[in-house]
Length: 221
Image 1 (cartoon, rainbow, N blue to C red):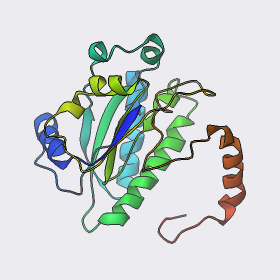
Image 2: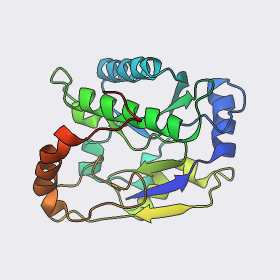
Image 3: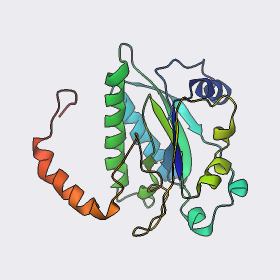
Image 4: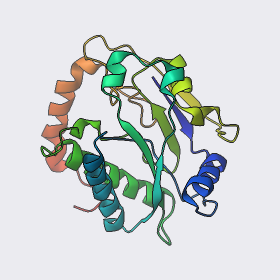
């Protein structure tokens, strides 16, 4: 289960000041939910790759925030506990003159490149624990391998009175043909998705057939 909301600016400014010691954030700054390997060395490598990509795309790293979680209150089951990742949020500020869709495109490229590079890294024993739930200046996602009721117990952030949003979309699903996992929970990075997981092989093949023709003036090669 998971929840997608608009970016809660008041909440983010409060925690950034209290936990990272930075001034109240402008609307250009954001944190996504980011799963990380439990092993310290592997988590450090993942963070280094993300930070290097942020620099490559000319944006500004503000800092990393460890997301508070409450296992006892959420009462996670053994399967969820065995695959539980470390969860951190990275706060990024847009470079001078970068706004709106330009910023979104850079964040999209950072997310995709980091995901491809790290989830396919054979040197990481916990590579699949790296997962970027959301990386957007518009929305933020909290999610995990639990029920909707456990979701709100697990993440104290969601009960904070300063966490306000004009939008809140909760998504839950029961996997019938794939084993549940943290990264498969709540697959809606935006507003919708293809619910037919059975067609995933066909979808991948169609994309491979088209990828040679896919290009855009808004992205680099």
